Length: 286
Ligand SMILES: [Zn+2]
Image 1 (cartoon, rainbow, N blue to C red):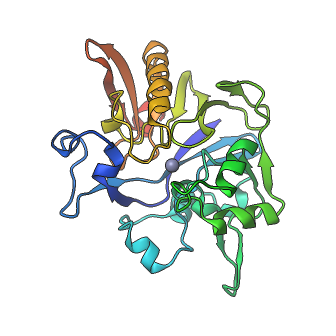
Image 2: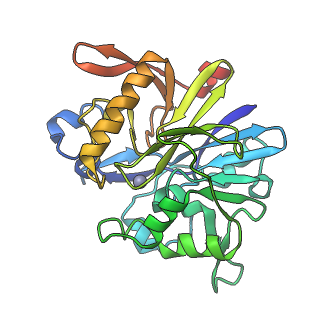
């Protein structure tokens, strides 16, 4: 098995929204804001090559939205999904499986693209199965007003119409192993219903892709919960349990949204679980 971090393109989000009740005087030490109060955000995917299977975990924002839409997100970076795949000798049509942690647009927007004549949408990975779970699909396709702007119809319906959409059987909560994908999944409900965090055993280490449970290194302290969460008190519970588990089992947290850090470990301290060490994929695995 080989795992490649795939940078799909960076963007920016409001620092206050990303840190909920934590004041700027505190969060700006780890996540400095620009003149518009925006902080750097990555959309990092993982690519797992395992035998004949080539699985992409999340796909970033994609490129089909309007300039006005992207104008809110201040895209910045010299790479995109295609250039990052190509850097490792892959292209979209090689992907056999796309696993989506959840269906917010910054995680699944890259799954769907304009068709050739820009008359409609089509899957951006024509040979892939798209994996979500039935509960989250229902949550996303019948959205509450709070999350409606994050679940874009143009990301969801073409996936279903293509026949490439698949639901993972949820046979054990809050953690299960999958036979379909070859890795484990932690289910968390605080950010959105049934977000899925992959846990992958790789070269003697255990990586968890922490997606929107812990977006950046700056979000490790328990109460640093993002303002977008639909059930913040539940996030506290889920995040607390996860941080203990990660500290006790030397889990390598892999960040989807941290533009400056790829992986880290955590440790118990007098103040609770905190950052231990930061790593890159290169230094850990090559
Ligand atoms: Zn999200």
